[in-house]
Image (cartoon, rainbow, N blue to C red; front, side):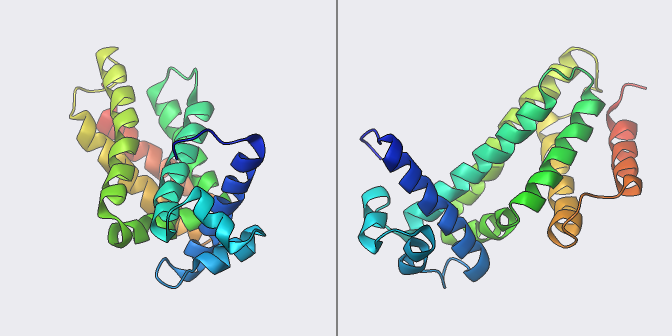
Amino acid sequence: MSKALTTRGRRTRQRLLDAAEEVFGNKGYENASVAEITQKAGVAQGTFYIYFPDKKAAFTELVKELNHLVRRDISMATNGITDRMEAERIGFQTFFKFVIKRPNLYRIIRQAEFVDYSIFRWHYQYFSDGYVRQLKKAMKNNRLKQLDAETLAYCFMAIAEFMGMRWGLWEKKTPPKKAMDTLMTLLSKGMLLK
């Protein structure tokens, strides 16, 4: 969107994105309609087109927003933590809590592969970029073994995604202590210097 939005415009746009998250998550991209999104948002159907040229544009923007929100939550939760294993534990727990709060994240990201492959790929690459930087920093400071940071980032993202699905999405709760202890043992045995 090229022109700056007013405060009211930003609120309306956000209501549309919130409604789109619910509609896309519950009905799927193909079965969702602009009419349902605007009805859920409580705005006239024509209002949608002030903010988004079409349904796909709203979907793409929603993927970007979800990516931003989950990264922001993890960043805030781990800010100032210097111990890499503690940062991993807090980061995983924060992600699991996000999944419980925003379960449509899974449905939307998985649909993205078929709706707009470039935004699907962007989501994972952009998420991994920050992760890689943090892992390289820990390696540089001799807090982790010298391993391929990108491979680690994608492995950890896969673990988070599947544990989040198993516990957050299916059970609507964070993983039990036994599961978190197993996860942290796996990470520490593979990543720590000793």
